[in-house]
Image (tube, rainbow, N blue to C red; front, side):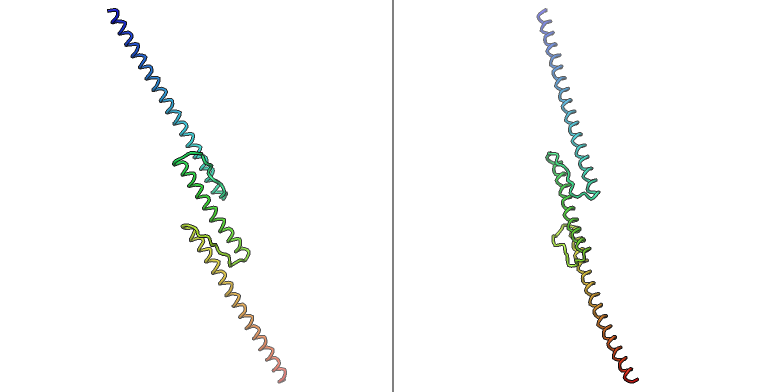
Length: 171
């Protein structure tokens, strides 16, 4: 009976030890899961801050700004690359348009944007080029009209001189 009682005590002690080991393992798994969740939330907050700084810079016209690479992979990396591609596209389109409007402001009506763009940016490029072409045509028409007026004015002046001479001769 004593041996049985000792065996029962050992069995209960082993069960208690096993329960304690399982509880310890569960606590360690829970702690690891909490650390992972904390790291995920911290990374998410870092990304949100980076994207917000980037968006503010773009809104302020600082188009050379880029989202810093977090070194991550997957969706996060694709999002960073996508935002940077968007910024590079905007910078490219706006720099071409700025060069075009600067040339136009200096009187260069023959300037055109030759690099094709995508989507609505292409329509903007075509509209700019058509505006320059139409403006150049308008200036040419005004120039021709001014020449015609000058020529007509010269003819009127010459006719007036002839008429004046004839009137003097008749008088």
